Length: 390
Image (cartoon, rainbow, N blue to C red):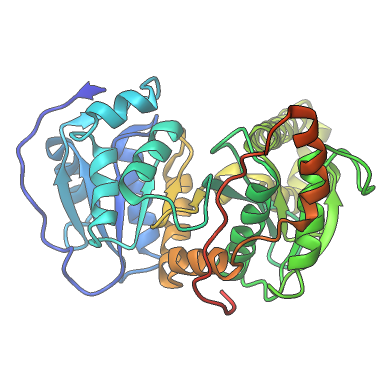
């Protein structure tokens, strides 16, 4: 963790009217200047928003002043920075002086309604889990991201995108419940359609935990007000067949990075093609409007912001390489979710499921137990808290 210096002061605006967001200003590849520029652009969208900005005050104060944000930003001095190379365990042991830790602490203390960081994903999840704790009934939190699609909203929700490479059937079902809440509150989808990502749509395909989750979700769908469409394939990620796509973090993260890389490749190839000769340049000019719309649809910055689901607080992970456009998108997502009381709704959604139905895997577990010579140790079920649509 790289040390930085500066005096400790506070700003002027955190207590004023408007929703307050906690922002880690120091963790991104492009530095705090990109973060402050993103906040300036977002302020044009939501002038009532207020920000707690965490980092080296000596660096942040002139940036905030020059951006004209002094009336809406409170600087919380933090001398240290979590680097992209820092190990999560290291940050958990000695990261209390970092901007990332300070940003999460403000959320925990109730001073802000959501937190945004461009920093190290593993460290951010570790610090978030340490300070905020997992919501009741959640064994493994998940990272949800928006995937461009042909749906009316323009996006599908996909999770887990890399919080944990493992996921058993119960985890996948909890992911589905959290994803439906995100689709409702983040995209305005009244009755989300949920699909399990698999190597085929036939019910006999896939790993044992996928088949068990399939059966469990089939039983939960009617009661929990979502439609379960069954297994979906990679080609369905941008389709209008589904609103929420559920998978483990290993598969989800590979899909995310593949999608982002493909989108960048397409954009770069288009630019190179339209510069290849006079006729190509003319064609580019004639189709500039249509190609501009395509570039906008596949721009990874436009859907920047992975949401940590399953914690007692709303945390948004912005891409480490985010520029001001990406920061603006992540902060905008945080603001929208804060406005809906998102973390509380997700927790209520998971709790409303009660103890998840284990009958779908009874026979399979009995067979496994017989082969192992002992009972299976399942993750604890969620306790019944409250019912209702969230």
